[in-house]
Length: 301
Image 1 (cartoon, rainbow, N blue to C red):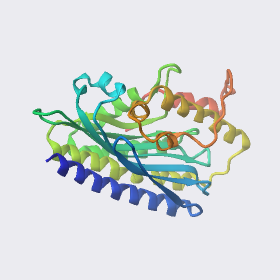
Image 2 (image 1 turned 90 degrees about the horizontal axis):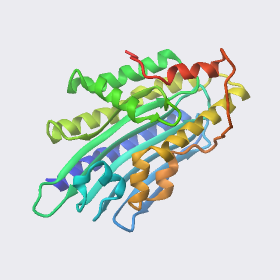
Image 3 (image 1 turned 30 degrees about the vertical axis):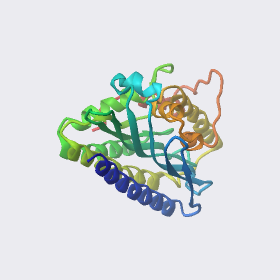
Image 4 (image 1 turned 180 degrees about the horizontal axis):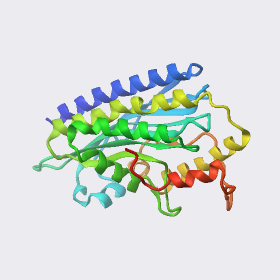
């Protein structure tokens, strides 16, 4: 049963990666994805796809990985101590898109599956995933569309699912040292195994398949919006928050590095250009100052 579960998830993930890359490449119209297939010495491998210097996307990374090992890394056993001493397998698709235009939000999506094994013991398995939106110049209609699409994907699996995963997203993608969320949220879930494999697999598929429906209309509305050098500089400054979260708080980054993952693939989430500025304060009443109002969780439905 274990091999069957992993094979089914891999088939879904390969198709999801292909569909997302094709759609983003068509939307960009200028640059294409280059694929970098890799093998991990400790077991497994993946295919990393990166689009650079496009008309719409300054950089877009969409990666698939399937890796396994004999010992759990510290970041995983700290979160789930019962996994100590088990062999493990993990596979997923993860993407981060950094658009060129400051009026198009950065976004992240991930769907994944994990199994851990021990002789003479039942396998431990779960799914995880979600997607979140990080705008620099937010538009209410975009954020509402994003959350409505997320809610629709969750709806067949229970009336409370979206609300729970939305709250989890707000709490997870939170920069404690800045006292602000990374963006306007979305949905996030982990350790999903209640209700049986088929239900959990179906929900994970629904989330992965909903991503383009949530994101592409926003890109299509905003990618031709004129912008100034000031707006571009603010985008580069706010990208610094993305770097801070991924390197300080993100469990996936820690797991990948501690488990001997491929560094280039793990860190392809980082923006190609970013700037840091000491003590930056936006001008009162400016569009830049208004962003702070969006970095506090609210009900977008």
